[in-house]
Length: 82
Image (tube, one colour):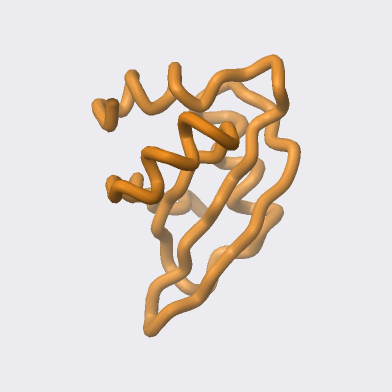
């Protein structure tokens, strides 16, 4: 099943991209960390070091830290965030 990933574009999310190499997404609440990791890695051709999630209301926010050899800034530019 495809996971619907929606990039989060806030001041905090942009600061995390620049300083910590972390991409922030919003998805459905039922998605698991393994499904999310696999989807992001296949979609953007990157490797993820760590995934953190936050459930607020009926939404799940994903903080995906990329491995150092991959730049979150490049992905953000492709998505039109930066």
